[in-house]
Image (cartoon, rainbow, N blue to C red; front, side, top):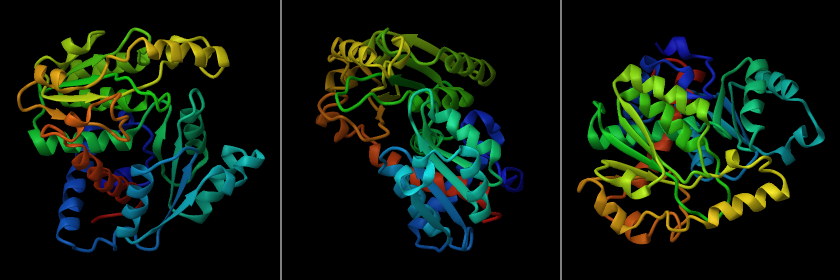
Length: 336
């Protein structure tokens, strides 16, 4: 199967079959075991190069890709627009064609609303090597893989009818992309989970994404429920993932000054959307708390929860490394 995905782009999990995704999880598990045992894996991508193009800041994604390819025997170039001639107006086509002649993979993070995913797809259209999304305005597939790997480790590989709640939460730091919850909707629904999405009415997810997630759930035997009540969403949940996302779809032009003011006003209405000990008490007694990080402590979640016994955020973060290695090994290389 690995020869089938060699050279394949990874921009959304929806473009990969469930068999292909299962292979990613199998390889991630193997690579994690080898890492724990300090067994070298530097033969997998020896002397291969990935170009990391970051239009935004990053901690987990940047370091999991760079550490990951180093452990696989390759090298990462850490690029930002100011280090490239993108800042001079170079076309995505030209960037894609040139980098394809220099290396073996292109990884891009561009989360600008209405721009990011289009840019990634334009690069992918012209690239002759695999393009890997490190997050855009619609999808964050690498985060989704790490999330699902972690749930499989904690609950088991048969996730049918496991109750997972993905909830909006209040945050002050910045208007976060829709990409994490939308990727969770698309990926988790492939595995038969019973998913609940909770958010204030001003903070919807993209309807076309949620419709595709519903189709995935119908096929896998799972379900999708939407509520605007955070307490209702937490009731009986086995996994809770409360995280902020922006109200980009609720205003006419989110990039205008008027749009930004409207989003800020909408945000301030919902300061009570916080994951605290009371809400965790509504969930299953053995529930798991997850967050992609960075968390807005004191707004999205209390310290008592994120540092408490239900939290598995650092296991989740660690799995960013192993799933990233699996994607690179399968798309850029050959057999382990």
